[in-house]
Image: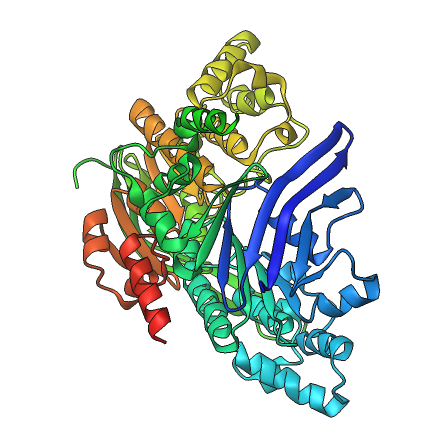
Length: 285
Length: 276
């Protein structure tokens, strides 16, 4: 049984100009212990899909799917109270802006403690020890002192570490990371990616990496879903995708990487658009 | 180097940090004595992580902030904005493009007005001439003339960055400082903007100081590379020198941290993972 299985997910937003379809019939399957990367540019619906799983979309969104199951249980059929027990405990999520995701008014220790209070039956003393332990596990130096630090007293990389500590506080079975390193320097990015993949390997949790960076995909993923304008272009294991991309859009994305530049000019997605239209026509009966 | 357009010698910049009501003030050395030359029509890439002083350097080159000590010489003229002012011609010679195309355009100004403002302030062109120049520039950066009357919120990030670049070259500067111009953009849009910068460099004989933390972009666009670390230039050489044989430890760390998207490294990673 797959950890997360989604079939034919559609998300529509009500806008002043009528309904806007952000996601149009996408499928995802994540097995336990697997790293799935969802890659696409802005507007491809990669974040919307996972926000739908977490139930974090605004009221203006209409979500429909044939199946949206976590460990075989359909998330939509769950009563709200049941779902809240799963979200934040078994499924956790971290976001792009680590400094904005933390509450500036409370210490990081307090914010970590909140998660434990909500989802575990540990005593105050046990929680306090666990908070220190968690900060240590994500590589925060001097956790005894840092526990009473406010988010603004920490760097972006350290805040992202705290976010990871909060997300992994209850040993989730699935961690969703939405562009976790986009706002960070390349050396810090490396540290955060290493931390995430090490934790994934040690705990055997499923990991979904949402990213627009093909480099991050190459460094972390087992399997990759490529999205474009709300539609799924290609699903493949990471080696096949880079060695032998089958969809023109994937080819376009890979050739737009500056390190793959052959001549003086970088090919852009526009160069592939004619090919993509031909491809879409082929699919239509 | 023949014909350097920009000569920087031992440039320093300190910031005074207030220690609060009773604390002592502290001096932060943001740039600690940097020297380099840039040849006309070439691209110097400045690489480093946040806090290494690369944006402070950009602010000094564009005459926004004065240096604490050291000299900047542009096209043979020494720049000193503290003692004896600066001529209009000098100000026009250097322009800057910022990282965030959402923050660097006035939301209440139409694109046409954005492009015409530099001309209005610095030249005696008539309104009709300014309009023609703005329309011609829109075409050069790959935007249709219909965009002349639109507001910034109607544009995507890539289009806004095109507008910001267009505004920067309206006055035909000699030197263009690009402060992380593509790091807020999607991959395919990034490719378009990099292509555009190449074309414009050829057409207007522009010299670029390209500030970036993305080594793959730097490798694509730069002729020379300077690596900064804690306010010092720790490595400076041609692109091929720096990329094929990095000398300083920090440069090596930077290379090691850059994600690799080639098939060989993926194979290596997967092999290591299945062995573990």
